[in-house]
Length: 205
Length: 159
Image 1 (cartoon, rainbow over the protein chains, first blue to last red):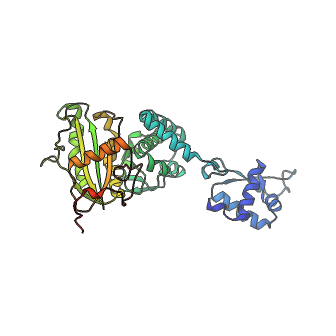
Image 2 (cartoon, rainbow over the protein chains, first blue to last red):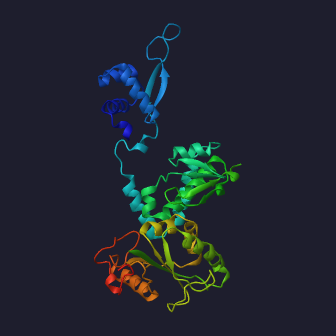
Image 3 (cartoon, rainbow over the protein chains, first blue to last red):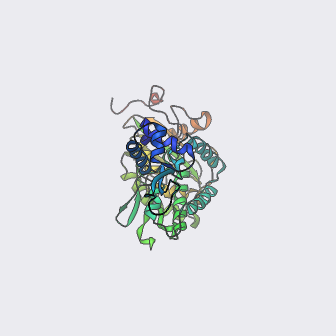
């Protein structure tokens, strides 16, 4: 979210998403009241941050020779919910639900649901490392393993480690299944300060 | 101060039955992980064999773990951030669900070796009165303080 700390950048971002359509550099500059080059700088930073996605389009009426090269336009990137704009509090609700699953002894059902979710989140034939990166796991190779630096469910895992780590393993196994790989390549191998799941590269092929 | 931890579990079948064999076979490697873990201080052993479980008079189906650690973090890292976690996940294969609290922690002076009776008293305290400074859990954790309950101990080794 630090990417939105700059007031001009935030204004540019808010203008683009408030339009619900593609916005060009000139339009964004005029709307926010800054130079075109400054607006372009911030728009591209927002693309880098994954909050906007770029495209190229002819903005004028004319087509064909002489109509000029296509202009760069920007729209809201899918998945901006991940940065909580606007503010959302899924964490508190997730903590409540985790407690309910614990109380009901529903961990096996929760793991099944996590496995299904994982399978839906992965595109067949996709790259495992890229898929994990997109989910926030920060994968890195170590020997014959792919390990994960970051636990995307850290707060929940601190409160309900057994449930959340089991669900996370199931989710990762689901991701593998969704990618068309052997789900058993994922295993629980927790270490302090890291995600609890590791992947065996040998099982990937 | 050191952190003492006791937990109990009720076996689904006798310790020497085939249903429990996996658990018994895991005792040696997991006890080794525990004893080699950073912050591990002490563990009540059942005998010379690494697969011996703690001997007690609380019923044949009750398995007791009882250990002392330097801090909450070191105990947490052993329980949830080591090879112990995958074993913990399988607990339902071997143990009944216990509706009451089955795990308790409390602070002890460094150098004190707690007795099993003391540990079972702390578990009773937790079961009767809920978590407090003298008997608590990871979820409802208490830092050491005046009401930690060390007045139960005659001396602290460091004093």
